[in-house]
Image 1 (cartoon, rainbow, N blue to C red):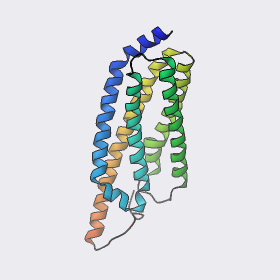
Image 2: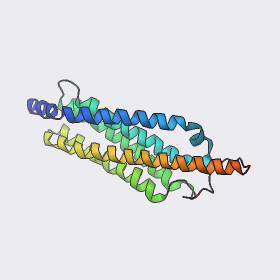
Image 3: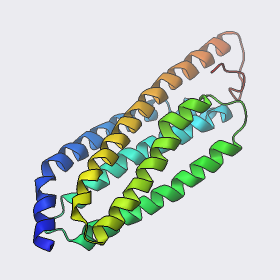
Image 4: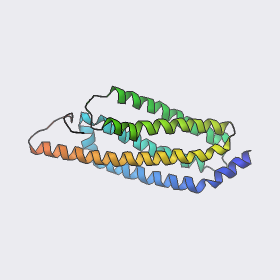
Length: 197
């Protein structure tokens, strides 16, 4: 079974190389984009949801990059692949539960709409991390054909994180414009609770 598993993993190495390269590129671009506007993001109390979105988008790109590292390790074993996937999945579920709690307790006025948080962050994370735990358990029990399901997890995370990154940049643009307009009127507010969604 181990030889079949190694052959199966080897067949997917080009895919994981491409996924890892894409994730590394996108996480670099996200890092630069957020760094250019970090003063604006961190200045206002009303941007807690934007901070949450930025953090999780960054972590989702890092997760895809971690998958590439796991699947490109020489001489992979069932436990060598299954256990790291299980750990990442469980950590992801814990993180997502915290995001759900923050989302449910957040102030009624926020910069991102409820459906944007659900569609771009909470639901994709919940689905992907639960699927990841299921795939990890399946691999640990020797069901090596479950490796192909990783494609859906990776693509969903990449698409979701890319969409979230785009939404983040658009919202930062709005945030910047709102702040500029308010500053031109002589104001210096500390939050964006009156911003329109």
